[in-house]
Length: 304
Image 1: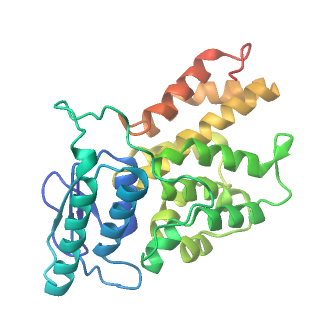
Image 2 (image 1 turned 90 degrees about the vertical axis):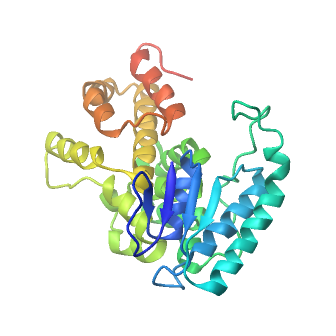
């Protein structure tokens, strides 16, 4: 994947567009990005700049052994460009030991460490406020648990479902976990999409909106609308597809363990349409491998 971060310039052919740093970071966290080109001034320096992406990549290299993509700068701001290029130089030096271990086929003898995924793991220091809030997993979990207070998931606190979905998407980065904790908050609580947007930013709010069904429709109508909506998702908002897949996985597992065969059969009937709308080759195969296994297991042998 080629990622182009810019607020005004046309997107080059074959590149995936990101308008804000958190969108670019999300693509780096869950996508196989081979090259990224960064602008600096994106229209709101308090929200974030291209330098935030440099900060994130450098932290991921140092903390997690992350192998960065090729990084370019197309900013017309001379001072910002020099700062970003200095950061790229530091990233290249820090990542040299990892690159030296890359085999001719592009693989590593040992996979690099994953980016920190604990719910209380802090975002890298030095990020702009708009980027940091989209990556604040601890705040998202606290907000969601408070909003879902008193609700049950089967016979367990609702937080158990949120934790399970967040754990399933943890390898896809902090923003994916934030969306996981908030995925039911608009549909099932009094929290609004406006409050999600104010607290966690546009990317998180847009992903939550994508996985939120209208309560005014029948289930068949809701799911038809959701599948149509999700089928057109691309770019950084594919985080919503990752979370939706993990949500369905936990729902199916819960049905089997709780003996709710009627609901399991409902999900089973919907699976073909769900797969057609939500699945993207190579996006989150680890989740889909588990999901397919659960669907094919049947109610007689719930997975462990």
